[in-house]
Length: 469
Image 1: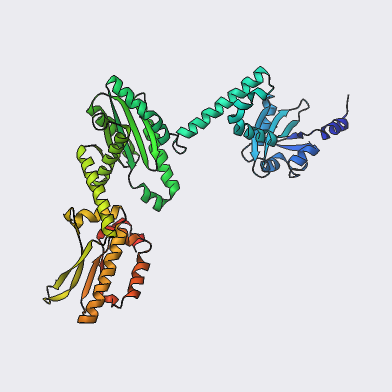
Image 2 (image 1 turned 90 degrees about the vertical axis):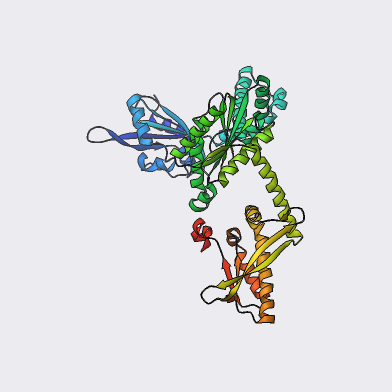
C-alpha cells in the first residue's frame, strides 16, 4: 500500500488542481468549516497562489466565486455521499473553471479544479463557424454519432439566432422584423377565407419625458411591464409585437365583429392602466379601412396620433377623414418649408394701448402668411404644424430679427420709446441655441433691449418648469 508521500508526489504532476480538506466541527458535532490539509502545485497555479494551506475554506474559496456556497456544498457532500459539479467564471481571476466536490472514504473533502478556458474558447469558435459547417462538413472526419451531436448544437444555435433576429431583447416580444415577415401572408389568408384583420397601434404616453426625468433604466422598466401585461392577451388569433421605441402592436385575426375589437381594445387599455401605464391606441381594420399592409399600419398609426392630439390615454378607430387631414397637413408642412425658403412670411405690428393712461403703450409683432395657392392662412393653423416639425425655430428667429430691424429704425428715425412685444413658441424657447441667437442679434442691431417684451404661453411653465427656468 502506497504511503501518503507517494500520493502527494503523484498529485503534484497532474494538471488538475487538487485541494484536500478536513472538516471542522462545532461542539454539537456539526460541520461549520473545512481546513485544507493538502494543496497541489496545479491548484496553487490555477488560483495564482491566492489560497493557502492555513486558510479555512469559508475565507478563501469566496475569492474564486462569490456565487457558490462552498461550505454548504462540502457539508452536503459529507451528509449525502453525493458529489457536486459545476462550471463557473471567476471575476477575480478572469478565468473559467470546472469544479467537482466530493467526500473521500477517509472522511476528507476533495475539491478538484479544472481550467476550462480552452473549452470555452472552442465553444465560441464553434458558434462563429457553424455557418461554414455545411461547406466544411465533407472535410470533417467524424463518427456518425459525433456528427449527430454537432448538428444538434448547430440547430440549437440557429434557433437562438432566429429568436434574436425576430424578438425584442428587452421584452422578448416578436419585433418589427417578425411583423413584416408574417403580415402579408396573414392578410392574404384573410382575403382567401373572407375574414377581417384588426391592427391596434399602441404608444406609451409621455415615455420620452419619463426617460428625460427619471432615466432610461426607469423607462425600460415601464416597457418591460407593458410588454409583460400585453403578453397575457396572446392566443391563436391575437399576436403582440414590440414595434420599436415606445410602440407596440396587437394583431387580431379572424375578427368577427367591430364590437369584438372594441372589447379587446378596452380590456388591453384597462389592463395597462391598472399598472399605471397610460397609452394611446389607434385601430385600423383590413379590408374595411386598409387594402394593404402599408395602409393597415399607416392608418392605425394615424388614428393613434389622433388620440395623442385629443388628450391621450384612450383609443380610436381609423376614419377616412383622418387620411384627408393627414394629406392636408403634409401639404401645409411642404408649404411652410417653401415659405421659409422664399421669404413669404410677413410681420405686422398691432398697437397696444394703456387703458388707464389712454396712451399708446407700444406694439405687438404679429406673424402673417399669404400663400399664392391657399390664400391667407390663419396662425392657429400653421403655427402648430410648424412647432411639430421644429420649423417654428427658423420662423421665430426671422420674426425676432425683423422686429429688431424695425425697432432700430423707429428709434433712429422717430425716437420711439414704446414697448414691442414678441410671441415666442415654447418649442423655440427650449432650443439650446435660442439664448445665443438672441444675444447675437442684440449685438448686431443698435436697439434698447428694455423696450423688448418676450411673451410665452403658460403651457411652457407647466410642461417643464426646471428646464424653462
